Image (cartoon, rainbow, N blue to C red; front, top):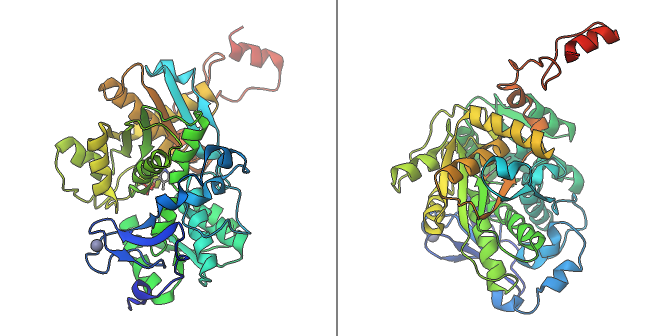
Length: 433
Ligand SMILES: *Cc1c(COP(=O)(O)O)cnc(C)c1O
Ligand SMILES: [Zn+2]
């Protein structure tokens, strides 16, 4: 194994350009822009560093509003030189006023960010679009990922759209719907007998060995920036305003922490009025390393060695950005909630039946987390709350039937009825008429 990728020079940002390079989140050491992800001095995570002064007065509300829908309307705050010529149509998903569901969980002003509607049915398309743009700019030979599920399809589809081969490395027991989805786009899918953390470790080595663009490994600083577009869209859809609370899922913690970065940027550029937003995070109780540390009031995040949950998309036992997520929850006055599988499954059913949106398990987790935070008083009755629904329920069919299988449709009620004979009397007798 070599460490070549750590030192391979990439394209420098244009002198005086808006992208200054990469910077260590831990020790603030600067690095050139390139496919590297870890600080050579302290092994801390690298982040994209922008020159916000260069954007003052350049990126205005009017300028953004005049552009076409999609994540590239915020180009100046994304780490690509320009909008790629090829790529999927990602972002500008609906912000739904949840007037039926809100009162049920005691939150009168509840918004749902419906990111079940991206090209491959999850918010991962946002992150992958940025990483893919960089892979194309740097002419990397392939697009690859270590996936808990949704990233598989997102990477495979993005690679197809830009004409690169895709290699998708997954835990061997992933949901079949997610595997089939990646295969459909022509990806090579490599199941690994181990947990996601085992997969991730292996991919670090493969990335060094092959030079492939692993969207969430050596392209991670770019990938992670894609999550900010959720915060940008929420603010724009609220009429350039910030909500009181955002409820987001936590797997590696990238999405959760980048929401705060994105909001900070909007404030810095004067696109929204400053406001202290509380961040509520959701994890599945069967793999809740960050929620556990939060509840215990400690800084140390003990890895979960064997995740045990139906919420596969969030099942990262050793989250890369867990530490920063923990700090953000505490500093913002939010919380990190651990949600049981049953509560997540119930929440999926509830939002589907009240708002007509069918999220996957991660959405069940955020909705249940919102209800828990409301019950605990972290969310007040008058707060304006945005809950992120980051993936589509069609990808976790096993979870939809979880707790539903026993729910038979009695006498015209909801659920699956027993088969009836093809005659009206049989139907009317089921209806209870
Ligand atoms: C990957 C994923 C997340 C969160 O991922 P982070 O690693 O925390 O950024 C949330 N929801 C879904 C559906 C996902 O696939
Ligand atoms: Zn460092």
